[in-house]
Image 1: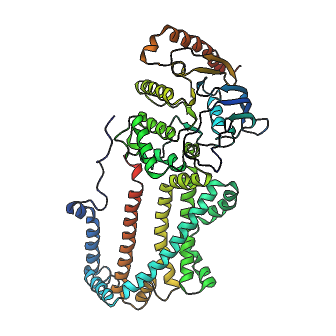
Image 2: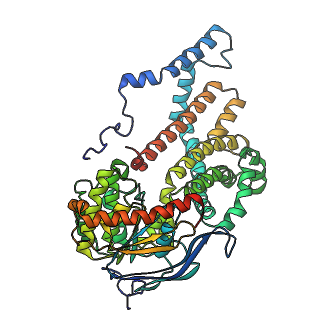
Image 3: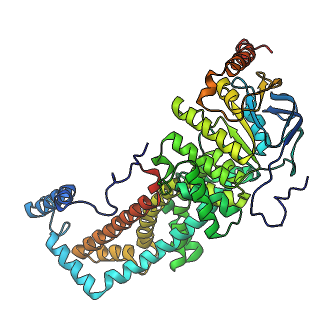
Length: 265
Length: 277
């Protein structure tokens, strides 16, 4: 009875050896070769698909002159604002739905109808409402990220073992304690999953809204570089934002693993 | 009759042991006020202060429902349940419960599970640490303070749950088939430990089980319940020595009483499968 199941896990973070890492990312290397082959063989013109060397030097140039970081910072601040608001509102709404029938009756149809709608369809709407400033993008990202958080929280909260609620109450917890310390806490795995979906949506909406309504940001940068025919720079910006998205998701996955450690073993 | 756990007075400290008075309690599931399934029908039961009382009956006899009513987890529809603190209206740490499936908070370590109720009771930090450790030691989980429930065996999880419940010092301890999910050996050990804990702490215990031997081994008195709708069919006094260990299983009185109760329960179980009362 004395064997706990500790010590079987990988250390948190990137616990891979260099060889494992190379192996894991070898498909990317293949893709890079294919890219170069397409350009060099003339199947696709070098104009449309510039060499990776050119893309890299454009990247370095934009990094040095500060364009890339400035625009990324602008974009990410919008995404973070919209996402943060969506997480706070989404968790509260999801919890209310799980707790109160009336909230469920009011909100459920709205969720059902708006969930499958592509939120980018709202880009013209938020532009009409709020104009070209930050607030229109933040609102769009908020709306796009809201439902995954609501649905995750609701499902998680409904799925909490009811005996845990009773246990807490019989140990002296108030109704509010039970909500905060048991329902919310027990829903956390689903909330964390919902937020991960929301994180991905926030990047999609960030870039796509900036194509249409912005005067700065990565999306704006990509579209204006494309319009100006500066393809190496355009690709550099695309890769950079892809990298930022990937990094954000990895970071989030690490956070999720840490906070859900109790589920392992 | 002056127990004041819900008052603004200091909440900290032991809850007085108390009897439980159940009078004329009926309960139905489904449609309110008729048309639903009658689970309990006119239950009258007086459980004494410090008594170890078993509710015994076939599955579906409403024994868990009765326990949940005493716990305040489901509202009393008709009749009255009261303790020294007054009529039962809501759950509270004066009547803490242990469930069959442990219901430990899976995101908390053993220690933090035990600390939960102590924090609610407002013990100062140093005292609650000391107290949590005392109960963890008492259920032989020393060394597992920082383990998560998922890392423990079923028996260890149930002992953690018992420590968590005992730590808040409930006057009344409610147990809902707490050893039902355990293997036979672990179960026997836990029964002996529970009996010893009860003997030392003198709490009122209401223990739900469908296992006749378990009931006879543990209880001072046993209520035998009939199948749906649940009624109390017999109340049996168990006049066995206070100190009960492995040897009691060969005691002739123990064997005779077990057989007698088994026959009574069997009638109910047979009636339940035939759908007649």
